[in-house]
Image (cartoon, rainbow, N blue to C red; front, side, top):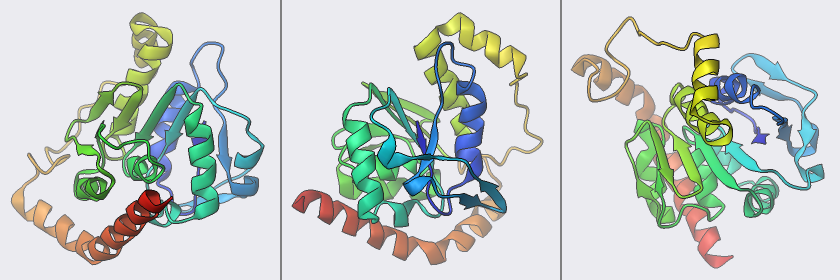
Length: 222
């Protein structure tokens, strides 16, 4: 089950959805509060399930986005995440979706991945920050930023349906990435590119950290 919220990054869930929709004998449900439409970077996702009407899920997969820090302060949304996550066999996320899992209380003492720019926001929740593209700690599987969601999805598909099947889906989708630039992580990006991206993200940093600290406070006092 993939829960959406305002200002989600659509590739965080559409990439994994493309892969996981091919899981045998499974239904991938995409839901939101009250089943309301969700706009994501100019695309509108409609006909969504109502989170409150879902009794359970085997896999909870939370995508990230600019709206993740607001989502983890939405008491109604977080109550549904906690309820569904409590009975899920796998707790998973892509990008800053791990912050939502953390705010729900699922990542304390767990290794977790996140977008490189926002990993430190996991710290107030007691999570162990991982710089892996896909991290696994028990039944918790988390992907790094945005496109890492596709790698994450194949990792999860192999867990659910076997490595051979996951490889067949990978071939069918021709997933063999060869990016045109070596700039996909801070470790390899040209210094001037990294500096420019950090500068653009800087105005968000203080507010996002404040939201994480507040969500962690609420979790501890719950």
